[in-house]
Amino acid sequence: MLNEPELRAILTTWGVIKLDIVRDGLVRCRLPRLQEIPKDTFAVLEAGSDVYSCYVRQLLEGGTPALPPLGRLDGTAFQKKVWNGLLNIPRGETRSYRDIAEAIGNARSVRAVANACGRNPAPLFIPCHRVIRTDGSLGGFSSGPAWKRLLLAVEQLNC
DNA sequence: TGCAGTCTCGGCT
DNA sequence: AGCCGAGACTGCA
Image 1 (cartoon, helix red, strand yellow):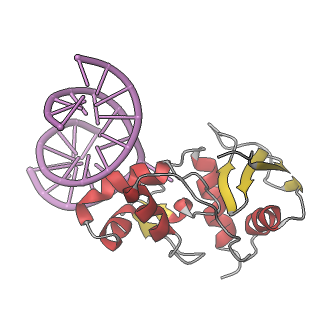
Image 2 (image 1 turned 180 degrees about the vertical axis):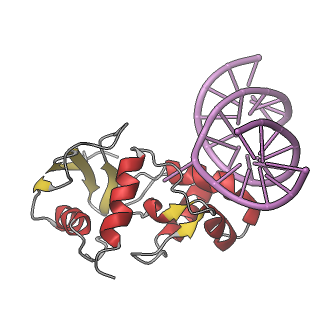
Image 3 (image 1 turned 180 degrees about the horizontal axis):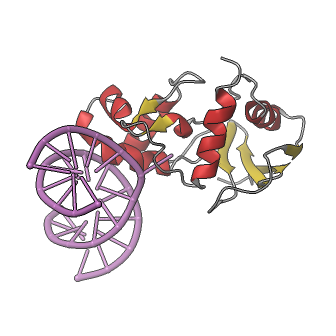
C-alpha cells in the first residue's frame, strides 16, 4: 500500500483513541490499554467532525450512530468470518462466544472465535464488546475490561 | 475450582 | 510442511 493511512485522534478522559483511515474507510481503531478502571468518569473531550470521529463520539455518549464505511481489514478467512458475524449483533444486545461460533458454522470453535475477537483491528466499529461468556460474565477485552464494561453500559442507555 | 476438549494462529524446525 | 504452545471459552466432575 503506497499511501499512508490518515490518522485521527479523539481525546477522552480515559486517554486518546486513534483511528487509521484509508481511501475505502476505517481500517484500525486503537484504544489506550487500561489495566484498571480509571478513576475519572468517562467523557469525550475533543473529537473531529469527520464521520469516523462523530461515530465514536456518539457511540460513547450513548447515541445510535450509523456505522461508517470500513476499509479492507487484513486477517485470515476465519477472522473475517468472525468479524463479519459480530457486525450482525444489534446495538444493546449481547451474544456469547458460543453463539458466534454456532452462527459461523461450528459450535466447537468457541476458543478460536475468542482469539479472533481479540484480534479485532477496529473495536468500537466491530462490536466485539457485545460478545460475552455463556455464563454471563464479561470475558476478556484486548484493551482492558474497563472499555468492555463502558461500552456495554452506554449501549444500555437508549434501547 | 480444576481440567480436558476443541479450533486457530504464529513461531520454530 | 509439520509440530507445538497458547488463548477474550465451555461443560462436566
